[in-house]
Image (cartoon, rainbow over all chains, first blue to last red; front, side, top):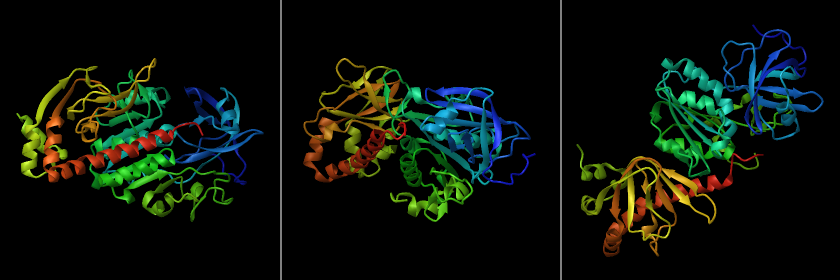
Length: 279
Length: 152
């Protein structure tokens, strides 16, 4: 059951913080629940607009399970005034929330195929609901591969959860970091370099890619080189989203608006404009 | 059980070479086993051998005085360690350390270098085999130094 419909699309609902978990020195995961009504349903890959009272509003991807539940989960990194304020919220604090918005990962359409997740840095957060969905419905998918790149070993997001996922025999997980000292026993190198090493059927694979745009560009090229058709590759775009409902134009990306046509987009639909620096 | 020759002939590295050229390369090959922590080579060593990793993982390291080694890449199964043998002054540019028990096929590069000088067709195929690897690693290094996961 969803919360009562909003008459004014810009009026946020009031949520309170149920739990705060520090992931990294500048990154927290917040669990928030509506003060009234039920949490709206959402799809993996969608986002909410989080409002720090008196400071501002930002788009943050949903990073919790899309299954039934009372709360939304958001992983937030401090990069500006609003994200810093939201990151400092404590249990019991209130914030405004609009959403969920946007197009998500096509997890249902991927059933029957191999699924390759390619995540870079904080890009693991928007992919997490899709990963949780696939793992919860594991028998509906072929091979499942998660390739995750991070800056260094101390910046690895969801480290404990990665360790749990690694124990499963039905998921191939490979992690790499850009820089490491000799104590690190894992891979060193960029995440696209993991793609040729991974085991999946490129002709029957759906790939979900999320991370910094440069990383996604190199990853899509590696997937293409591995034989994955570009209409089987999905990326999560990031632009400056303000209204979140396709009215203001701040997040315009060529002929599309990232807030309503994305953030998840099929790569072949945006391939021609993806590398144009003015866009 | 597959012998060294069979293993090497199935390796993608040899796919572009003629049977005669492959024979020559196979003739320069020998098996290696490196325990975790053991070095394949150190920076400045004569680059007289390169390695095709069969199993395991190799870390490429650079050491700055007074600081712990920095690992800038790891290579795994099917990948090639060492390209300095192709370029004068034929000395390695970094340290290569086995992260875990690693089995590799070593190719006698000093011998092969001479053969490439004598037979330019072989040398050309060798360059075609190595150049894509070097370009791929150069591109990866470019992405690495962009520090794309850095703070906005």
